[in-house]
Length: 145
Image 1 (cartoon, rainbow, N blue to C red):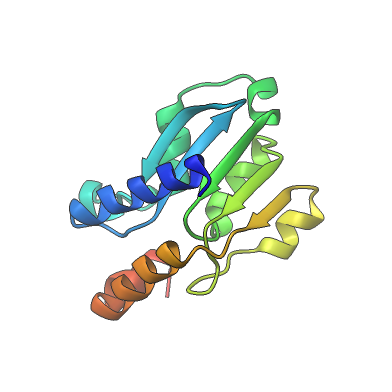
Image 2: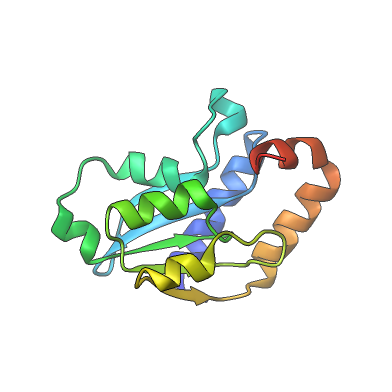
């Protein structure tokens, strides 16, 4: 397995262990993780701390050139907010663990020139299926339903 996707899965599991939603993300520049995070909406009482947002926040301020050379990994297809942030900062590649349980605006992101790679990882799928079955209200809150 890709070690960067594995790191995102570790983040997802950390979020679940904290009582949150099991979605994880890492930002990679070259061959190094420069940011990592997981969905912390529940833990922080936040409206916006999806995994990708937490990851980018934890990466800190970066140059435009750094963003243009990086890859964002997420265990789940990024939502409109997280996809928009990736577009805003010019992140050219996003690796998605799975999009069976939720699919963000992938076609739009592709139309803006971002390379999307869908792994369809069974671990990512199972984490979300189990969580959604156990906590449907929390999941619907997270995706704005």
